[in-house]
Length: 520
Image 1: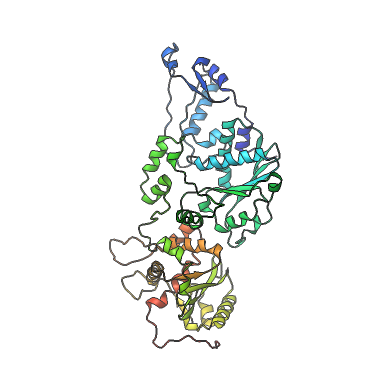
Image 2: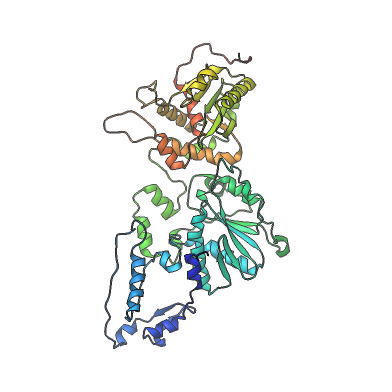
């Protein structure tokens, strides 16, 4: 036997009309200013005209937030229930309550402006057009259940709308329409192309917190909307995207074209600030205004897209984006290959084929055996006439294969001393050089469009200098562990781009020429 979820239990509770609540509390109708069936304001004159004895006040407070979110609201509701059970007359006043005990799900959108818009739009569409199918997609379906479903309940309640029910995978309406919750998590090994979305058909949909969603998910979903009863109702395929400012594919495909006046006519960019929401409390605004990190404050409070994400950022983000359009860098230059090898785990085997400062993504695949790596690199070098000394690869954990299969290639050890002793190590000097090349507009990256946002994200996240320690003046970047923490994955594309800079910082033998013959 299955157990009902918290939200299912909450939905089954019968709400009492506000007039009944007022009557139970001894409040005359003349003091009520009703807002629908279940809400009302109370005239302050009640305080002056009532002859009832004052009750006792219990103030529940705590440090906010509590470690597990189990504090003030839960305690308050439980206390009121207990006093009612003891025969006491109790009334609760909650300010910005936790959504767990109130709506059945812990969490919810802060402010709720964008989420309210999405839920309101989808509810209206579903009810106006019976048997249509819509979606809400987030990076994590758990977040959808804990935010979208809660906000939807609030929206429906504000209209007195009850012709729906919550299901395991979304919302179903009594007229046959439905809203499906989609998991847009990026699984690079299992489903790198989001093929799991390819068989679905939707009338339209909404991507919430799109800054956390992979660009490919957006591309696939675009092809799946406008395919379910759209012709019958004469509906255009529409997708709502809500997000906070973030320098990723949203910046490139929507914000920048909006600013430049090149946004396609079938797209619209609408900026909504916290000050535009009349229902936001002054305390919430003051909380945002008090955020100590300037970049976060500018993003969340003022909706700034052109934020300086980090004072230690080495490469300008616009210059990073330009890397994918610098076609002029496809001219003459020495041919080289840089590769990030992977034989186990979740990392990828990635290699770029270089002509000068033009990098073409040549290999991009899940981890491989040593022999497969050797074969792929050998084939790539023969195809483009790259001699072994012009191939550089990260050799960590692959020593035996490099000795036997890939003898003669450059092995990159990021922790080795830097040629310039003002840098912490070799990796740091290469990273600083890569940032220099990017900022000068000298790097061109040739890769599939769906990967551009991923690579740009890695370059921004990894080209970050570590604050100089008190006892050293050496320049260094954040370490691999910190990069993974920011990205949620290994920087598989950044590493080979960075390693290529070895040839720019280490003096090369004079008279070096491109070798175009076969490898021995």
